[in-house]
Amino acid sequence: MGESASGAAQDADEEARRRLNAYTYLSAPERLEHVAIMRVFCGTLLADLAVPDVMAKLRQAGASAAGLDADTLTVRLEQLVQWGNLLRSSHAVNASSISEYQRSRSRYQLSKLGERIQRDADGVLAEADAAREVSSEMLALVERGLRELADLVTAPGGIEPQDGLERVSTLFVQFTEFADSIRDFYAYLGQVLSRYDLDSAEYQGFKELLLDYVEAITEDVAFRAPRISAALDILWPHIRALLDRLDAHAQGLCGFSVEGENRLEVRIQRSRGRELADWEGLRGWFRDSDGQGSQVDQLRDATLRALQSLLANAKRMLRSASGEMSRRKDLLRLARWFDEAAPQDAHDIAVAAFGLYGARHLGVPPATDEVVPAYTSWWTGPVVKVPVALRERGSRAQRGRASAVEDHSAQKQLLREAARQRVAARAAAADELRSASGRFAEVRLTSAALGLLLELLATALGNAQLSRRDSANGEKSASFDLDAASSEDVELRIRLTVRRSTGTRTVLYSADGDLLLDDLVLDIGRTSPMVDGEAEASVS
Image 1 (cartoon, helix red, strand yellow):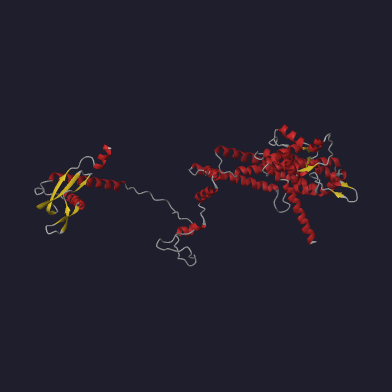
Image 2 (tube, helix red, strand yellow; image 1 turned 135 degrees about the horizontal axis):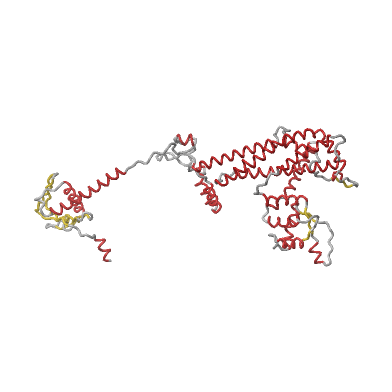
Protein backbone atom coordinates (compact mmCIF):
# COMPACT_ATOMS: atom_id res chain seq x y z
CA MET A 1 0.00 0.00 0.00
CA GLY A 2 2.81 2.39 0.98
CA GLU A 3 4.87 1.45 -2.10
CA SER A 4 1.92 2.04 -4.41
CA ALA A 5 1.25 5.44 -2.86
CA SER A 6 4.94 6.39 -3.22
CA GLY A 7 4.93 5.25 -6.83
CA ALA A 8 1.81 7.29 -7.55
CA ALA A 9 3.42 10.36 -5.99
CA GLN A 10 6.55 9.89 -8.11
CA ASP A 11 4.43 9.52 -11.24
CA ALA A 12 2.56 12.71 -10.36
CA ASP A 13 5.86 14.59 -9.85
CA GLU A 14 7.21 13.32 -13.15
CA GLU A 15 4.04 14.39 -14.94
CA ALA A 16 4.23 17.85 -13.35
CA ARG A 17 7.90 18.15 -14.37
CA ARG A 18 7.03 17.19 -17.95
CA ARG A 19 4.30 19.81 -18.12
CA LEU A 20 6.47 22.54 -16.61
CA ASN A 21 9.24 21.80 -19.13
CA ALA A 22 6.87 23.06 -21.81
CA TYR A 23 7.31 26.58 -20.36
CA THR A 24 11.08 26.49 -20.91
CA TYR A 25 10.98 28.10 -24.35
CA LEU A 26 9.57 31.30 -22.81
CA SER A 27 12.77 31.83 -20.77
CA ALA A 28 15.38 30.44 -23.17
CA PRO A 29 17.89 32.88 -24.74
CA GLU A 30 16.18 32.38 -28.13
CA ARG A 31 12.70 32.92 -26.67
CA LEU A 32 11.65 35.51 -29.27
CA GLU A 33 12.40 33.04 -32.07
CA HIS A 34 10.59 30.25 -30.23
CA VAL A 35 7.52 32.45 -29.67
CA ALA A 36 7.44 33.41 -33.36
CA ILE A 37 7.60 29.73 -34.36
CA MET A 38 4.86 28.77 -31.90
CA ARG A 39 2.62 31.53 -33.25
CA VAL A 40 2.96 30.00 -36.73
CA PHE A 41 1.70 26.65 -35.45
CA CYS A 42 -1.05 28.24 -33.34
CA GLY A 43 -2.36 29.96 -36.47
CA THR A 44 -3.27 26.59 -37.99
CA LEU A 45 -5.65 23.82 -36.99
CA LEU A 46 -4.68 20.16 -37.31
CA ALA A 47 -1.90 21.06 -39.71
CA ASP A 48 1.58 19.56 -39.78
CA LEU A 49 4.28 21.80 -41.21
CA ALA A 50 7.70 21.04 -42.58
CA VAL A 51 10.74 23.27 -42.24
CA PRO A 52 10.19 25.03 -45.60
CA ASP A 53 6.55 25.70 -44.67
CA VAL A 54 7.55 27.25 -41.33
CA MET A 55 10.24 29.37 -43.01
CA ALA A 56 7.75 30.70 -45.56
CA LYS A 57 5.19 31.59 -42.88
CA LEU A 58 7.85 33.32 -40.74
CA ARG A 59 8.95 35.47 -43.67
CA GLN A 60 5.34 36.25 -44.50
CA ALA A 61 4.63 37.35 -40.93
CA GLY A 62 7.87 39.36 -40.73
CA ALA A 63 8.63 37.86 -37.33
CA SER A 64 11.94 38.10 -35.48
CA ALA A 65 12.79 34.57 -36.63
CA ALA A 66 12.30 35.37 -40.33
CA GLY A 67 16.06 35.37 -40.95
CA LEU A 68 16.67 31.83 -39.67
CA ASP A 69 18.16 29.39 -42.11
CA ALA A 70 16.88 25.84 -42.52
CA ASP A 71 19.48 24.22 -40.25
CA THR A 72 18.97 26.69 -37.38
CA LEU A 73 15.19 26.45 -37.72
CA THR A 74 15.41 22.66 -37.56
CA VAL A 75 17.37 22.92 -34.31
CA ARG A 76 14.69 25.23 -32.86
CA LEU A 77 11.90 22.88 -33.90
CA GLU A 78 13.64 19.83 -32.43
CA GLN A 79 14.15 21.71 -29.18
CA LEU A 80 10.44 22.53 -29.01
CA VAL A 81 9.71 18.83 -29.58
CA GLN A 82 11.95 17.89 -26.64
CA TRP A 83 10.16 20.39 -24.39
CA GLY A 84 6.75 19.00 -25.42
CA ASN A 85 5.41 22.02 -27.30
CA LEU A 86 5.48 20.33 -30.72
CA LEU A 87 4.98 16.77 -31.92
CA ARG A 88 6.52 14.98 -34.86
CA SER A 89 3.90 14.26 -37.47
CA SER A 90 3.27 10.69 -38.62
CA HIS A 91 1.80 11.68 -41.98
CA ALA A 92 3.28 10.10 -45.04
CA VAL A 93 5.38 12.31 -47.30
CA ASN A 94 4.73 12.37 -51.04
CA ALA A 95 7.84 13.67 -52.81
CA SER A 96 8.79 13.76 -56.46
CA SER A 97 12.53 13.79 -55.80
CA ILE A 98 15.06 12.81 -53.17
CA SER A 99 15.89 16.45 -52.36
CA GLU A 100 12.21 17.27 -51.85
CA TYR A 101 11.87 14.24 -49.58
CA GLN A 102 14.87 15.36 -47.48
CA ARG A 103 13.35 18.83 -47.05
CA SER A 104 9.85 17.59 -46.21
CA ARG A 105 10.35 14.36 -44.28
CA SER A 106 10.50 16.15 -40.89
CA ARG A 107 7.05 17.53 -40.23
CA TYR A 108 5.77 18.95 -36.96
CA GLN A 109 2.41 19.67 -35.42
CA LEU A 110 1.24 21.52 -32.31
CA SER A 111 0.65 19.68 -29.02
CA LYS A 112 -2.34 20.52 -26.83
CA LEU A 113 -0.09 21.66 -23.97
CA GLY A 114 1.99 23.82 -26.30
CA GLU A 115 -1.09 25.48 -27.75
CA ARG A 116 -2.46 26.29 -24.28
CA ILE A 117 0.84 27.76 -23.07
CA GLN A 118 1.34 29.90 -26.18
CA ARG A 119 -2.23 31.17 -25.99
CA ASP A 120 -1.72 32.21 -22.36
CA ALA A 121 1.65 33.80 -23.22
CA ASP A 122 0.09 35.87 -26.01
CA GLY A 123 -2.62 37.01 -23.61
CA VAL A 124 -0.02 38.09 -21.06
CA LEU A 125 2.03 39.94 -23.68
CA ALA A 126 -1.03 41.72 -25.04
CA GLU A 127 -2.96 42.64 -21.90
CA ALA A 128 -0.68 42.27 -18.85
CA ASP A 129 -0.51 46.00 -18.07
CA ALA A 130 -4.04 46.93 -19.14
CA ALA A 131 -6.87 47.61 -16.73
CA ARG A 132 -9.58 45.08 -17.60
CA GLU A 133 -13.17 46.14 -17.09
CA VAL A 134 -15.27 44.00 -14.79
CA SER A 135 -18.08 42.26 -16.67
CA SER A 136 -20.67 43.14 -14.04
CA GLU A 137 -23.51 42.63 -16.51
CA MET A 138 -22.61 38.92 -16.51
CA LEU A 139 -23.55 38.73 -12.84
CA ALA A 140 -27.11 39.82 -13.64
CA LEU A 141 -27.28 37.18 -16.38
CA VAL A 142 -26.01 34.53 -13.93
CA GLU A 143 -28.74 35.46 -11.45
CA ARG A 144 -31.42 35.35 -14.12
CA GLY A 145 -30.14 32.04 -15.51
CA LEU A 146 -30.06 30.37 -12.08
CA ARG A 147 -33.60 31.50 -11.24
CA GLU A 148 -34.95 30.30 -14.59
CA LEU A 149 -33.06 27.01 -14.31
CA ALA A 150 -34.39 26.46 -10.76
CA ASP A 151 -37.96 27.09 -11.95
CA LEU A 152 -37.62 24.63 -14.84
CA VAL A 153 -35.92 21.91 -12.79
CA THR A 154 -38.49 22.03 -9.99
CA ALA A 155 -41.43 22.12 -12.42
CA PRO A 156 -43.44 18.89 -13.01
CA GLY A 157 -41.65 16.72 -15.55
CA GLY A 158 -38.37 18.55 -15.12
CA ILE A 159 -36.38 20.36 -17.78
CA GLU A 160 -35.79 19.20 -21.30
CA PRO A 161 -32.24 17.78 -21.56
CA GLN A 162 -31.19 19.88 -24.53
CA ASP A 163 -32.60 23.06 -22.99
CA GLY A 164 -30.86 22.25 -19.71
CA LEU A 165 -27.57 21.60 -21.49
CA GLU A 166 -27.72 24.96 -23.24
CA ARG A 167 -28.68 26.84 -20.08
CA VAL A 168 -25.96 25.21 -17.95
CA SER A 169 -23.26 25.90 -20.54
CA THR A 170 -24.40 29.51 -20.96
CA LEU A 171 -24.58 30.01 -17.19
CA PHE A 172 -21.00 28.85 -16.56
CA VAL A 173 -19.59 30.77 -19.51
CA GLN A 174 -21.10 33.94 -18.07
CA PHE A 175 -19.89 33.18 -14.55
CA THR A 176 -16.35 32.35 -15.73
CA GLU A 177 -16.16 35.61 -17.66
CA PHE A 178 -17.28 37.58 -14.61
CA ALA A 179 -14.90 35.81 -12.18
CA ASP A 180 -11.89 36.19 -14.51
CA SER A 181 -12.58 39.89 -15.03
CA ILE A 182 -12.81 40.41 -11.25
CA ARG A 183 -9.44 38.71 -10.67
CA ASP A 184 -7.71 40.64 -13.46
CA PHE A 185 -9.09 43.99 -12.33
CA TYR A 186 -8.11 43.57 -8.68
CA ALA A 187 -4.65 42.30 -9.66
CA TYR A 188 -4.15 45.49 -11.68
CA LEU A 189 -5.54 47.57 -8.83
CA GLY A 190 -3.11 46.03 -6.35
CA GLN A 191 -0.19 46.69 -8.72
CA VAL A 192 -1.13 50.35 -8.98
CA LEU A 193 -1.83 50.95 -5.31
CA SER A 194 1.51 49.44 -4.30
CA ARG A 195 3.23 52.45 -5.86
CA TYR A 196 4.24 55.28 -3.56
CA ASP A 197 5.31 57.73 -6.26
CA LEU A 198 1.88 58.86 -7.47
CA ASP A 199 1.64 62.53 -8.24
CA SER A 200 -1.50 64.56 -7.63
CA ALA A 201 -2.99 63.90 -11.10
CA GLU A 202 -2.49 60.12 -10.87
CA TYR A 203 -3.80 60.09 -7.32
CA GLN A 204 -6.94 61.96 -8.40
CA GLY A 205 -7.56 59.46 -11.19
CA PHE A 206 -7.15 56.42 -8.97
CA LYS A 207 -9.28 58.02 -6.28
CA GLU A 208 -12.15 58.36 -8.73
CA LEU A 209 -11.50 54.80 -9.89
CA LEU A 210 -11.82 53.46 -6.37
CA LEU A 211 -14.63 55.62 -5.12
CA ASP A 212 -16.80 55.27 -8.23
CA TYR A 213 -15.95 52.11 -10.17
CA VAL A 214 -14.98 49.83 -7.30
CA GLU A 215 -17.90 51.03 -5.25
CA ALA A 216 -20.28 50.22 -8.09
CA ILE A 217 -18.80 46.72 -8.40
CA THR A 218 -19.00 45.91 -4.71
CA GLU A 219 -22.54 47.24 -4.43
CA ASP A 220 -23.67 45.17 -7.41
CA VAL A 221 -22.04 42.02 -5.97
CA ALA A 222 -23.48 42.70 -2.51
CA PHE A 223 -26.96 43.19 -4.04
CA ARG A 224 -26.99 40.06 -6.22
CA ALA A 225 -25.02 37.61 -4.06
CA PRO A 226 -27.96 36.83 -1.69
CA ARG A 227 -30.30 36.31 -4.66
CA ILE A 228 -27.86 33.96 -6.37
CA SER A 229 -27.36 32.03 -3.09
CA ALA A 230 -31.13 31.68 -2.70
CA ALA A 231 -31.49 30.36 -6.26
CA LEU A 232 -28.65 27.87 -5.66
CA ASP A 233 -30.34 26.68 -2.46
CA ILE A 234 -33.48 25.87 -4.42
CA LEU A 235 -31.51 24.19 -7.21
CA TRP A 236 -28.97 22.31 -5.08
CA PRO A 237 -31.08 19.18 -4.18
CA HIS A 238 -31.66 18.60 -7.92
CA ILE A 239 -28.07 19.10 -9.17
CA ARG A 240 -27.04 15.42 -9.25
CA ALA A 241 -30.20 14.38 -11.04
CA LEU A 242 -29.77 17.22 -13.51
CA LEU A 243 -26.17 16.22 -14.28
CA ASP A 244 -27.17 12.55 -14.75
CA ARG A 245 -29.95 13.56 -17.12
CA LEU A 246 -27.58 15.77 -19.14
CA ASP A 247 -24.98 12.97 -19.34
CA ALA A 248 -27.60 10.53 -20.54
CA HIS A 249 -28.65 12.99 -23.24
CA ALA A 250 -25.20 14.09 -24.42
CA GLN A 251 -22.34 11.96 -23.15
CA GLY A 252 -19.72 13.85 -25.14
CA LEU A 253 -16.19 12.45 -24.95
CA CYS A 254 -16.83 10.55 -21.74
CA GLY A 255 -17.71 7.40 -23.67
CA PHE A 256 -14.60 7.57 -25.80
CA SER A 257 -12.62 4.34 -25.75
CA VAL A 258 -10.74 2.06 -28.08
CA GLU A 259 -11.99 -1.51 -28.00
CA GLY A 260 -9.50 -4.28 -28.36
CA GLU A 261 -7.36 -6.54 -26.30
CA ASN A 262 -6.68 -3.63 -23.96
CA ARG A 263 -9.27 -0.92 -23.33
CA LEU A 264 -7.66 2.54 -23.68
CA GLU A 265 -9.02 5.13 -21.32
CA VAL A 266 -8.52 8.81 -22.27
CA ARG A 267 -8.60 11.60 -19.72
CA ILE A 268 -11.44 13.95 -20.56
CA GLN A 269 -11.81 17.57 -19.47
CA ARG A 270 -15.52 18.11 -19.24
CA SER A 271 -17.25 21.35 -20.21
CA ARG A 272 -17.84 23.77 -17.35
CA GLY A 273 -20.99 22.87 -15.43
CA ARG A 274 -21.03 19.17 -16.34
CA GLU A 275 -19.45 18.05 -13.03
CA LEU A 276 -20.51 18.49 -9.41
CA ALA A 277 -17.18 20.21 -8.56
CA ASP A 278 -18.08 23.06 -10.93
CA TRP A 279 -21.34 23.68 -9.09
CA GLU A 280 -19.58 23.50 -5.72
CA GLY A 281 -17.13 26.15 -6.93
CA LEU A 282 -19.99 28.35 -8.11
CA ARG A 283 -21.74 28.01 -4.75
CA GLY A 284 -18.50 28.66 -2.80
CA TRP A 285 -17.99 31.91 -4.72
CA PHE A 286 -21.13 33.40 -3.15
CA ARG A 287 -21.33 31.50 0.16
CA ASP A 288 -18.84 30.33 2.78
CA SER A 289 -19.11 26.56 2.51
CA ASP A 290 -15.72 25.39 3.84
CA GLY A 291 -14.95 27.89 6.61
CA GLN A 292 -12.39 29.74 4.46
CA GLY A 293 -14.72 32.55 3.47
CA SER A 294 -16.49 33.14 0.19
CA GLN A 295 -15.13 35.06 -2.77
CA VAL A 296 -17.66 37.79 -1.98
CA ASP A 297 -16.03 38.20 1.45
CA GLN A 298 -12.58 38.30 -0.14
CA LEU A 299 -13.83 40.90 -2.59
CA ARG A 300 -15.05 43.06 0.28
CA ASP A 301 -11.71 42.69 2.12
CA ALA A 302 -9.75 43.53 -1.04
CA THR A 303 -11.81 46.70 -1.50
CA LEU A 304 -11.09 47.70 2.09
CA ARG A 305 -7.34 47.15 1.59
CA ALA A 306 -7.48 49.23 -1.59
CA LEU A 307 -9.10 52.09 0.29
CA GLN A 308 -6.42 51.82 2.98
CA SER A 309 -3.70 52.01 0.33
CA LEU A 310 -5.40 55.07 -1.14
CA LEU A 311 -5.40 56.66 2.31
CA ALA A 312 -1.69 55.85 2.73
CA ASN A 313 -0.96 57.61 -0.56
CA ALA A 314 -2.97 60.60 0.60
CA LYS A 315 -0.92 60.80 3.80
CA ARG A 316 2.30 60.55 1.79
CA MET A 317 1.23 63.42 -0.44
CA LEU A 318 0.43 65.53 2.60
CA ARG A 319 3.88 64.80 4.02
CA SER A 320 5.50 65.69 0.70
CA ALA A 321 3.65 69.01 0.71
CA SER A 322 5.25 69.79 4.08
CA GLY A 323 8.73 69.08 2.76
CA GLU A 324 9.12 65.30 3.16
CA MET A 325 9.44 64.34 -0.50
CA SER A 326 9.50 60.84 -2.01
CA ARG A 327 12.88 59.16 -2.39
CA ARG A 328 11.88 57.33 -5.58
CA LYS A 329 14.13 59.39 -7.84
CA ASP A 330 17.08 58.89 -5.50
CA LEU A 331 16.47 55.14 -5.43
CA LEU A 332 16.20 54.99 -9.22
CA ARG A 333 19.49 56.87 -9.55
CA LEU A 334 21.08 54.47 -7.08
CA ALA A 335 19.73 51.51 -9.08
CA ARG A 336 21.25 52.98 -12.25
CA TRP A 337 24.61 53.26 -10.49
CA PHE A 338 24.39 49.61 -9.48
CA ASP A 339 23.52 48.60 -13.04
CA GLU A 340 26.45 50.47 -14.57
CA ALA A 341 29.06 49.65 -11.91
CA ALA A 342 31.66 46.89 -11.95
CA PRO A 343 31.23 44.16 -9.29
CA GLN A 344 33.75 45.65 -6.86
CA ASP A 345 32.40 49.16 -7.40
CA ALA A 346 28.87 47.85 -6.77
CA HIS A 347 30.02 46.47 -3.40
CA ASP A 348 31.50 49.84 -2.49
CA ILE A 349 28.28 51.62 -3.50
CA ALA A 350 26.21 49.24 -1.37
CA VAL A 351 28.45 49.83 1.62
CA ALA A 352 28.27 53.61 1.19
CA ALA A 353 24.50 53.67 0.56
CA PHE A 354 23.27 51.21 3.19
CA GLY A 355 26.15 51.00 5.66
CA LEU A 356 26.46 47.22 5.13
CA TYR A 357 30.01 46.94 6.40
CA GLY A 358 31.75 43.67 7.04
CA ALA A 359 31.83 42.04 10.45
CA ARG A 360 35.37 43.27 11.07
CA HIS A 361 33.95 46.79 11.44
CA LEU A 362 31.46 45.72 14.11
CA GLY A 363 32.38 47.04 17.55
CA VAL A 364 33.88 49.99 19.36
CA PRO A 365 37.65 50.64 19.08
CA PRO A 366 39.59 50.43 22.37
CA ALA A 367 41.47 53.29 23.92
CA THR A 368 44.55 54.47 22.06
CA ASP A 369 46.85 53.51 24.92
CA GLU A 370 45.60 49.89 24.90
CA VAL A 371 47.38 47.85 22.25
CA VAL A 372 45.57 44.52 21.84
CA PRO A 373 47.24 41.90 19.59
CA ALA A 374 45.17 40.46 16.76
CA TYR A 375 45.39 36.92 18.18
CA THR A 376 43.72 37.94 21.49
CA SER A 377 40.30 36.31 21.88
CA TRP A 378 37.23 38.42 22.56
CA TRP A 379 36.56 36.26 25.62
CA THR A 380 39.83 37.17 27.32
CA GLY A 381 40.46 40.61 25.80
CA PRO A 382 39.90 43.88 27.61
CA VAL A 383 36.36 45.16 27.93
CA VAL A 384 35.45 48.17 25.81
CA LYS A 385 32.94 50.66 27.14
CA VAL A 386 30.05 50.93 24.70
CA PRO A 387 28.14 54.23 24.66
CA VAL A 388 24.59 54.04 25.96
CA ALA A 389 23.11 55.32 22.67
CA LEU A 390 24.93 52.63 20.67
CA ARG A 391 24.05 49.87 23.16
CA GLU A 392 20.34 50.68 23.44
CA ARG A 393 19.47 52.12 20.01
CA GLY A 394 22.27 50.82 17.80
CA SER A 395 23.14 54.32 16.67
CA ARG A 396 25.76 56.87 17.62
CA ALA A 397 23.59 59.77 16.51
CA GLN A 398 22.55 62.19 19.21
CA ARG A 399 18.81 62.59 19.72
CA GLY A 400 16.95 65.80 20.20
CA ARG A 401 17.11 69.10 18.42
CA ALA A 402 20.56 70.32 17.46
CA SER A 403 21.68 73.45 19.29
CA ALA A 404 22.03 76.67 17.38
CA VAL A 405 25.47 77.58 16.12
CA GLU A 406 27.12 80.06 18.51
CA ASP A 407 27.81 83.50 17.06
CA HIS A 408 31.51 84.40 17.44
CA SER A 409 31.42 87.57 15.38
CA ALA A 410 32.03 89.84 18.41
CA GLN A 411 35.04 87.80 19.52
CA LYS A 412 36.42 87.83 16.00
CA GLN A 413 36.05 91.60 15.84
CA LEU A 414 37.90 91.99 19.15
CA LEU A 415 40.71 89.75 17.96
CA ARG A 416 41.02 91.68 14.71
CA GLU A 417 41.13 94.98 16.63
CA ALA A 418 43.78 93.66 19.03
CA ALA A 419 45.90 92.45 16.11
CA ARG A 420 45.56 95.82 14.38
CA GLN A 421 46.65 97.61 17.56
CA ARG A 422 49.70 95.36 17.93
CA VAL A 423 50.72 96.06 14.35
CA ALA A 424 50.27 99.81 14.89
CA ALA A 425 52.29 99.70 18.13
CA ARG A 426 55.18 97.88 16.43
CA ALA A 427 55.11 100.34 13.53
CA ALA A 428 55.26 103.29 16.01
CA ALA A 429 58.12 101.61 17.86
CA ALA A 430 60.04 101.21 14.57
CA ASP A 431 59.54 104.90 13.75
CA GLU A 432 60.72 105.81 17.23
CA LEU A 433 63.91 103.73 16.86
CA ARG A 434 64.72 105.16 13.44
CA SER A 435 64.35 108.73 14.80
CA ALA A 436 66.56 107.98 17.87
CA SER A 437 69.37 106.39 15.89
CA GLY A 438 72.74 108.06 16.70
CA ARG A 439 71.43 109.94 19.76
CA PHE A 440 70.40 107.22 22.20
CA ALA A 441 72.02 109.15 25.08
CA GLU A 442 69.58 112.02 24.54
CA VAL A 443 66.23 110.20 24.36
CA ARG A 444 64.25 107.86 26.60
CA LEU A 445 62.73 104.96 24.70
CA THR A 446 59.28 103.56 25.34
CA SER A 447 58.80 99.99 26.44
CA ALA A 448 57.63 98.97 22.92
CA ALA A 449 60.66 100.59 21.26
CA LEU A 450 63.11 98.97 23.68
CA GLY A 451 61.44 95.57 23.18
CA LEU A 452 61.72 95.85 19.38
CA LEU A 453 65.37 96.96 19.72
CA LEU A 454 66.25 94.02 21.94
CA GLU A 455 64.51 91.68 19.45
CA LEU A 456 66.60 93.06 16.57
CA LEU A 457 69.80 93.04 18.69
CA ALA A 458 69.34 89.38 19.64
CA THR A 459 68.87 88.43 15.98
CA ALA A 460 71.96 90.46 14.93
CA LEU A 461 74.17 88.90 17.58
CA GLY A 462 72.90 85.53 16.47
CA ASN A 463 73.95 86.32 12.92
CA ALA A 464 77.56 87.34 14.01
CA GLN A 465 80.35 85.17 12.59
CA LEU A 466 82.86 83.42 14.86
CA SER A 467 86.45 84.07 13.74
CA ARG A 468 89.81 82.68 14.99
CA ARG A 469 92.95 84.91 15.26
CA ASP A 470 96.61 84.36 16.23
CA SER A 471 97.86 86.23 19.28
CA ALA A 472 101.35 87.75 19.78
CA ASN A 473 102.63 84.73 21.70
CA GLY A 474 101.47 82.38 18.92
CA GLU A 475 98.28 81.18 20.55
CA LYS A 476 95.00 81.13 18.64
CA SER A 477 91.94 82.94 20.06
CA ALA A 478 88.29 82.91 18.94
CA SER A 479 86.04 85.99 18.83
CA PHE A 480 82.84 87.15 17.12
CA ASP A 481 83.23 89.39 14.08
CA LEU A 482 80.56 92.10 14.32
CA ASP A 483 81.63 94.08 11.30
CA ALA A 484 78.77 92.67 9.22
CA ALA A 485 76.29 91.60 11.94
CA SER A 486 72.82 92.93 11.20
CA SER A 487 69.12 92.09 11.39
CA GLU A 488 66.00 93.54 9.85
CA ASP A 489 62.21 93.39 9.83
CA VAL A 490 60.86 93.58 6.31
CA GLU A 491 57.31 94.43 7.31
CA LEU A 492 58.44 97.30 9.57
CA ARG A 493 61.15 98.30 7.08
CA ILE A 494 63.79 98.68 9.81
CA ARG A 495 67.41 97.45 9.86
CA LEU A 496 69.82 97.23 12.83
CA THR A 497 73.59 97.08 12.23
CA VAL A 498 75.91 96.20 15.13
CA ARG A 499 79.63 97.03 15.03
CA ARG A 500 82.37 96.35 17.58
CA SER A 501 84.22 99.46 18.88
CA THR A 502 86.64 98.91 21.75
CA GLY A 503 86.16 101.35 24.64
CA THR A 504 82.76 102.55 23.50
CA ARG A 505 79.87 102.58 25.97
CA THR A 506 76.34 102.84 24.59
CA VAL A 507 73.59 103.57 27.11
CA LEU A 508 69.90 102.99 26.21
CA TYR A 509 67.45 104.84 28.46
CA SER A 510 63.89 103.58 28.64
CA ALA A 511 60.80 103.58 30.82
CA ASP A 512 61.64 100.02 31.95
CA GLY A 513 65.24 100.85 32.93
CA ASP A 514 68.67 101.60 31.43
CA LEU A 515 70.66 99.19 29.24
CA LEU A 516 74.51 99.49 29.02
CA LEU A 517 76.28 98.01 25.98
CA ASP A 518 80.10 97.83 26.13
CA ASP A 519 82.21 97.92 22.96
CA LEU A 520 79.11 97.97 20.71
CA VAL A 521 77.82 100.66 18.39
CA LEU A 522 74.21 100.48 17.14
CA ASP A 523 73.06 101.94 13.85
CA ILE A 524 69.36 101.84 12.89
CA GLY A 525 68.21 102.58 9.37
CA ARG A 526 65.39 102.00 6.92
CA THR A 527 65.31 99.01 4.57
CA SER A 528 64.69 99.39 0.84
CA PRO A 529 61.06 99.21 -0.35
CA MET A 530 61.80 95.92 -2.17
CA VAL A 531 63.47 92.90 -0.63
CA ASP A 532 66.44 91.22 -2.29
CA GLY A 533 64.52 88.19 -3.54
CA GLU A 534 61.89 90.36 -5.18
CA ALA A 535 64.57 92.57 -6.71
CA GLU A 536 66.33 89.55 -8.21
CA ALA A 537 63.04 88.20 -9.52
CA SER A 538 62.22 91.54 -11.15
CA VAL A 539 65.68 91.82 -12.74
CA SER A 540 65.49 88.29 -14.17
